[in-house]
Length: 240
Image 1 (tube, rainbow, N blue to C red):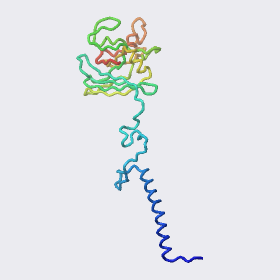
Image 2: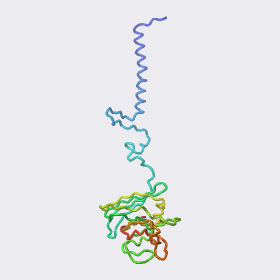
Image 3: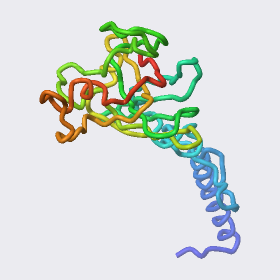
Image 4: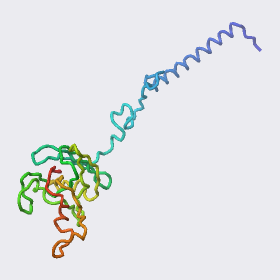
C-alpha cells in the first residue's frame, strides 16, 4: 500500500475544493433565477410581495380593488326625485339582488311624516299634467296609476312599496326590497316607469269593515285600493 506524503494530501484537498466551488456557484445561480430579486425586510409589515405570475386576489395589496372586485356588477337603475318646483329632493336606486330587487331611497327637503311610496306605470314626471285616463290636471299625474307587472294581479300592486318616513329635518333614508317586479319590468321595454313620493301616508287598503260606506258599498273601495289614499304627488323620478 502506497504511502501518501503531506504534499499529496494538500494537493488532493485543493482539487476537492475546486470541484465543490463550481457546484456551489451553480446552486447560487439557480436560486437567483427563481427569485424575484426582493428580500424580506426586518421591519414588520414591509415584506415585499413575491411575484408568481398569477393575478393578485381581489382585495389583496396591489390588486387595485376591493374584496369581491371582478364579480359581475348588479343590474341596477337610478333616478333623481324632484318636486313640483323642479328641485332635486332625493335619489332612488333599484338593484337586482338574487331573486328580488333592493330599493334604496335618500331624501331631503321633504315634508316630515309618513309618505306613500309607489312605482307608477308611466315613465313621465310632468307637473300640471293630466292622467292617462283623463280628468283634472295635477302634479305628476302623467305618471299614471300604480305599476302592475305582467302576470301580477290583485293587491298590493307590484309598485306598492314600504312607506317613506321623513324626519323633522326633512331628510329620509329607506332600504327595502320587493320580489313583485324585476329591473327589466321597471324599464318597461324602454318606455320606463316612475317612482312617486306622495304627500300623505299609504293605508295599504287597511280599512276595517266597520267603516262601511253608504248603500253597502265595498270596503275598502276601489279608490282606496288604487291609491292607498296617499293623497297628492309630492315628488317624482323617471325610471329607465
